[in-house]
Length: 217
Image (cartoon, rainbow, N blue to C red):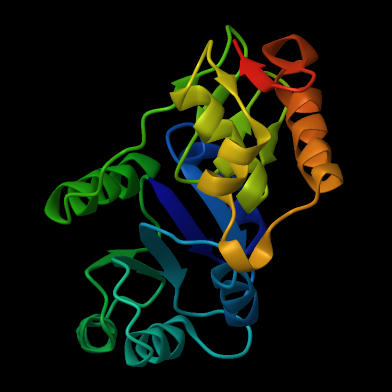
C-alpha cells in the first residue's frame, strides 16, 4: 500500500516516516503544493494529512481534492481537540481522524483498518534475485542499499521479460507489446532501455541474441 504523508512539523514527520516505512511505502509532502506535485506522477492508496500546515490547510486541500473527484481514503491528524474540527474533517471528505499526541501503533491500526474497509490490496513483490525485489504497481526495485523507480517503458519491459522467462523475445515482439503504434521506437532507443535494465538487474539476466532478440533468465 502506498501512502502520502503531509506534515510540516520536521520532528514529527521524521518520527512518522521512520515508523511507517517499516511497513509501508510512504512518500512525504511538506505542504499542499508538494502534494499536488506528487500527484502528478504517483497514485496513492491512502492520504495522511495534518490540518495545520503552511499555506492551504489540510482540510481545505482535502475538500479541493474531493471536488476534483479524488476519492483516496484519508486520515486527518491534528492537535485540535474539539469536535468542531472533527465535524469539518468528515465534511471535507476524511474517513478517519486521529488527535495529537497519539501512539504510533494507534496510527498503524487505523491504517490497517482503512486498508480492510476499502479492500486495499497490499502488493506482492516479484523476487528477481536474492537481493532484488520488483514492485509492479509502483515500478519500484528494492535492493539492500537503495530503492529505484523505473520509467514507464523500463518497467513495462522488465514486466514483459519477467512474464516470459527463458524464451527468445524478438525486438518486434517487444515493440508490439510495449509501444503504441504512433510512438514506435528506434533500435537505439530499445537498446538504451535494455542497457538501463541490465545496469539495475544485472547484465547476466538479459542476454542479447544478435539477429534474434533477447533472452531473460
